[in-house]
Image (spheres, rainbow, N blue to C red):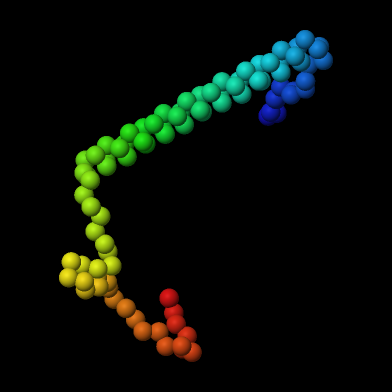
Length: 91
């Protein structure tokens, strides 16, 4: 079985070349406009979503993570392992 593809040679007639150039530019222009419209819709939708989230949360003052109300530092809980220098470790 032989695969047959049309040749992708440019047309020899100057008017046909010009028309194919205009058609290619038109397709690129349509794709560019469509892409910009999609990007604009996503940008506006994201701004609206962020605005709604901020409005629902209210304007609560931000709490400081590093200290509590009585001036004591915050405690970071977790499991820790002491690594001794000069001793190989496996991760």
